[in-house]
Image (cartoon, rainbow, N blue to C red; front, side):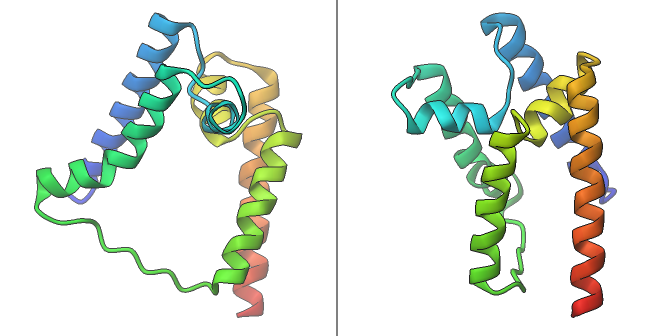
Length: 135
């Protein structure tokens, strides 16, 4: 099997899940918004099911392919923690995350999502370049 098939299949499932959520619930598959509601007072069964599906994904992969994908974390935990906090802060400032803007927003040709996704990509490229130069 080509190494690209799992990524293609995963992308198709993301697109299908996003379309189904939007068509049947009128909601956007933005993880930061869903998690914000889950952590706040506005908990909904659909949000819980969505998050449960995300958490079950690796185990479904293991059941289908016989193993979990290998993951190697090379960055120190304090750096990962700081990065996670900055991402959380940025998603609130940007009114959404990469899934909401990058998948749903771009599909709807939202100008705000186009600008947000371009900002995510440029910032990520700059951060990776700086980190690579410092390593």
